[in-house]
Length: 383
Ligand code: GDP
Ligand code: MN
Image 1 (cartoon, helix red, strand yellow):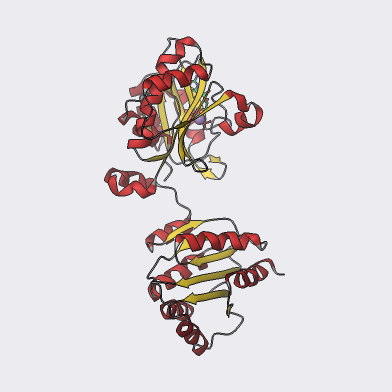
Image 2 (spheres, protein in one colour):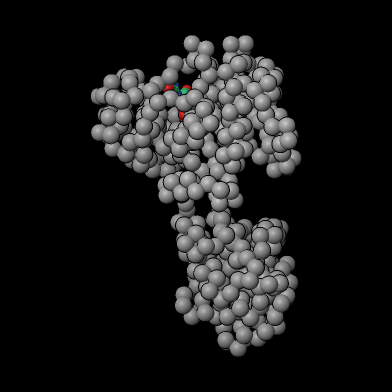
């Protein structure tokens, strides 16, 4: 779950990471009130979950209430890369001597936590990675050792930060690591991390992504859920308690088990198609779950074919088949289904589908995953 900047800063503050005083506003008047309280000059910042807000005109300095009115009025409702600004964060403006970059994230390839630190901050780290990769220090962290202020000091020196920035950066890095690990983040990023002319180090921006798998130990995350910007398909899937992730392709995917669902995406790609989603209906899925899954897939107007890939273990073939028949009686599917049904009670399931007399234009059955993928992709691509 991605947080807005203001939520990320609130999260940082729990771990004593220094951020500027400020407040949230959804109207121009509120923005002025917050600015009055924070003290001028202030920065008016669009709250959207996309980078490059500064370049897009979503971040403006204001020296007095009139300027706050002007900028807040312009930024509210602004479209930044397809995200409409509904919320502002207004904070006390900082003087900047230098801008750095710092983040902790999970390096999935190495299966380790990764620190990235650079003295080239303020621009997107992907850009630095392309134009000047040597300017990014990358350091894996052993979870047993953790990451101390001393480690932070070494990192800051190795990243070639100036002497006056070393201690402050070391302290923030140690806190950011606490935030990342104890706070169950997938990403905790500060860009820019600034050195002020007075020598203090300070987080000017916050990008935090929380690990949804840890939600059970964070009842306080409910507050973030409430403001979460989900894609409409994902919202619907959540209402149905489905493990769904929206993607950009045209083949709707339903599979049982996360592993099989991921393999299904791979196979669809391998035969030249593209998946519209990841959807795992889990073990033991019954007819109701299948119906809900088809409703969610059917909501997606990019879907041109639906590939149902079931290898029954705990999930039983006849339940899957009943769900499909039930769904077809309840909703007019926008795209034909290709099914590969194997494993527990697959024969019974196939029999149910045959008995239901569903026309070939709406449902075809294939004996293997590869053949089913080819058929689904052929429909989706019109070949
Ligand atoms: P992003 O463009 O979405 O990453 O938004 P940031 O919060 O990182 O702000 C972009 C840029 O605006 C920063 O790199 C700074 O150069 C500038 N900026 C943001 N806040 C302040 C501030 O308080 N004072 C000054 N002088 N510049 C700021
Ligand atoms: Mn930034």
